[in-house]
Each structure stands twice: as C-alpha cells, then as structure tokens.
Image 1 (cartoon, each protein chain N blue to C red):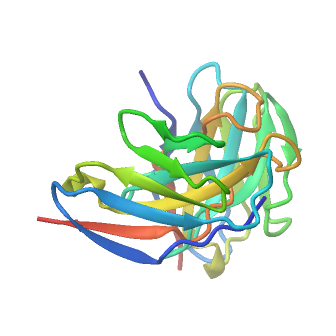
Image 2: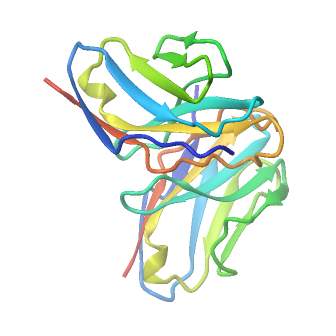
Length: 112
Length: 115
C-alpha cells in the first residue's frame, strides 16, 4: 500500500469546518483512499472512502486532488464529539492483504 | 443492531500468566481481524480469519500469541506467559464478506495491563 503522511495534530473551533489533509504521493491507480477515526477509548470507526471522485456521506466529505497525490477529509460543522484521531489509509483491491495500515493519524481537537 | 463486542474490557495479569480475550463479531460476518494498539500508536494488525480459517497470522509478535475461531463466529486471542511488553489494547474487527475493501467494524477493545 502507498505510504500516507498526515499532520500529527490540528485544532478546530466548534461549528466550523475541519479540514484534515493527507498526502499519498506514491498512490497507484487502483488504490483507494479510506478514512477511519478513533474516539478516545473506542475502536476505530469507518468514515468514508474514494478512488478518484469526491465523495460525501452523512459524516463527511472527501476531496481527492486530480493527480490523486493528496486528499482532504472535511467535517463541515465540527462538534465536540468529533474530537478524535483521524487515520488516512490507502488500500488496493488486490495485493494489499487484509490488514488496515493505520499509521499515527491526526489528532483533531474541537474546542468550544 | 448489535456491533462487535469484546470481553473482558479490562484485564490485569501478572507477568507469566496466560490470558484469553474474546471477540463476538457482528452476526453473519465472514471476516474477523485482531489488532494490537500500544499507547499513543495506531492499531497494528495481528491476524485475520475468513470463517474458521486463519488466512494471515503474519502480525502475531511471537509464538506466545495464538488465535482461534473454531466455528467461524466467536474468536479468542490467547497470550501465553504474558510479558510487560504485551500491555496494550487488543481490538477485534469484523467485516461482512471476504472482500479486501470491505468496511471493518471494530469493537471497543480489551485493555490488557501486565504487571
């Protein structure tokens, strides 16, 4: 799987959009970008994934650059409950194995 | 519906003791994963089951770690002769099918402290 780089920590004010970047400059054409998050003392939770196009669901939006070398997870109106560690993971349909490679992620703190 | 459950939630063991950690996956889920998460780190893969078959155990750190899923549902992770470096949160996840890109649903984890 392609290696990902994320900032170790970010802050965001409650009610504002949280934009979490991820660099995956070595991504190959068949690799998807996945985002999971882990709230303190809980197991990781799936958020969203995408291949080329931007994606949106009830939790977040995923913006992937045209060259696919980076992406941004957007939480449009962050709440205190969005405080968590966010992991950007690149996965291929074949050859990846089944394990998720979490890395260290970005610790997001949403402040009142 | 019921998610992935793990028991016990907390376990304190003396060095050298054997421990057994249980995972109840979401009913009907084919795939089951175990991960280990050290303090301040992301989860790291230990092993993977597809039904009762253990297809990948490449992440098990030593032969003291053993996992089983005999009937293709509940799984147990056993650690023999525990060491202090085994202290971590052990996470179980399951997914509906065997597809590599299937969403993994995680349990709350078992926090193991070895004294």
